[in-house]
Image (tube, rainbow, N blue to C red; front, side):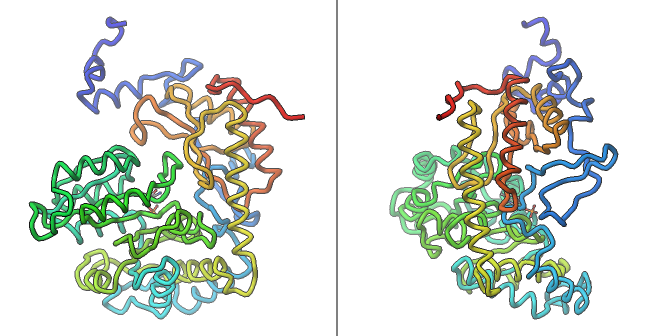
Length: 443
Ligand code: PMP
């Protein structure tokens, strides 16, 4: 009712983010407690343990152990590993935890060079460059490859690091409807004529930026269609594979492999080491010329301390396991396992009547809660039964599109997943977030 809106009326007109934030803080959970003061609903992790493949979290003050359904540990490498760990320890002894130098001032070890070559080979590009942080890879790199007079066309749900990089570049930024190639084409057509040569148009350069798997949607990029549009309008493509590299594709090479795209058709491939590889840092893979240019001009390469050597060694070892170059079939087993786990979990949630976003094979699966007031209850009730689930809401999602986001790992066992499904199902009934009729059990 209007009289209850009081000072918050502008939200109705969609005018001010500020009012939306204030309103969000005033929303109460299902039990009448303001969301902001429902501390038992949030992850209060004080300790993690890696000796069981990092799939559980300790909540030490209550000494409960939770099944971790929130980590990006897609292949289970964020854990002690028989191949990776001894090599990481050895690299720590040899190089220490930090080079204390930038890449160009003595901070390049043979491990950095080896990883750059390995990443380029893994993703199918000529060369690669490393960065100490995935976020910075986008936010510092984008301003390096485009500036004033350039045009960035960005998916509407791209990650904050891309948004910041695009804003900071000084280029004109246009947004196209999430994962909608026909709208991308519309936006491009507004700017240039089809087939117009790069030298005869109002923009110095046009770059289209998309993600391989969208982290809040669990959706695969419609990459083949996006590339077709980019080719038609002679725009460059920039693909962020943070959530897809290592996690999808027959040999873990990401969405290009999964969707049958030739990596040569993607101009710039970006990825992070913080998910499938169980480490930290990020990379850009591209042509030799682009990488050479970045090595001479990108401030985040020239002025930032190089990646920690043990972190570099962790990625080298993880990629070798994925490729079977450790002499075992563990990599192939991990890849098969994450696919089976993801597809099993997704289809079981759907059968229960949940609205689950995303595509098959994607290990990211958001369960729609919609009402932000349901977030604390969902998360708290799951935690009470020792299942840790990340909930995401405004400003990471639109105000009324709150969700719980499950991330599946190859290290989850079938028993883990069945237990989690039982808990999530009960919680879904309790707080009323099964929006579809459940499928009757098969006999
Ligand atoms: N890109 C995307 C799509 C991401 O989801 C993230 C973080 N989850 C990043 C970049 C930043 O990566 P990092 O956490 O490794 O800094």
